[in-house]
Length: 199
Image (cartoon, rainbow, N blue to C red):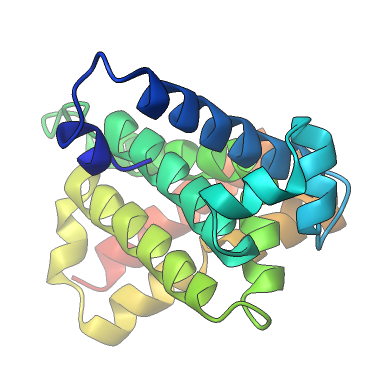
């Protein structure tokens, strides 16, 4: 979640700490519910978090707000992960493989959130913006690891990234049941050749 509210409140303020703990419990309850329920209700979140429904609505004005807080949590985690240095002296093929492995491990870790955000974006339109933001952050990270992509035309670059979007990974991994290592191997080879062949 964003750290901005904490900057305005003294660290000794017990009410803020309790409020934050309550919000965290609500967000964690939503994430847990999403593993088995595509469209959890506020009532289900309240029950799962063991927090009264009225308290849930005091902390969040609606379900969309809870989704947005969950998204912020995940963006914060990605930001911390992406702060790591990138060794651009590593061979090109190794960097491509590393970038793909990192991306697919994110999909593996946050599969539930990606599914929920995409499936709920029609009902909760602001969630579509969160999907776009997630992909943009991951795209920037990929280019940081493989800066050669900057030499591709816009359409070539866009075509490359459509191959590693979450729905593509989900289809290969969960529907067609391919092994994660095989997906990484094949994508690494294909994208390496694609980049080298178009710059």
